[in-house]
Image (cartoon, rainbow, N blue to C red; front, side):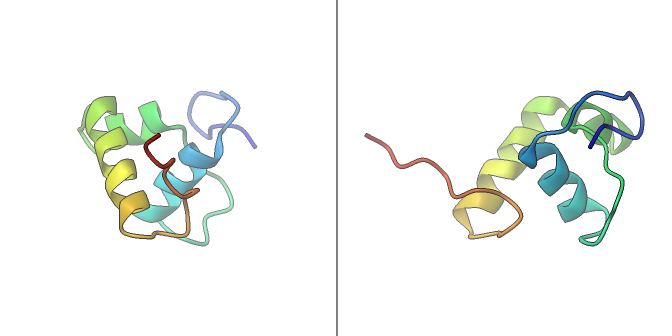
Length: 68
């Protein structure tokens, strides 16, 4: 799957973030930079939200890595 805006290949984080913010059933998605730009946030803020969603158990993202 590629970004609907820029064509970049998508990762599980791109898809999860887009589906979390837009529509869980979305068939086409945007990458994190394009989604963040659309919502007027920085990529850093997007990653903060992703880490928050991971910690709270959101199933759209892989579980956070445990501290070693």
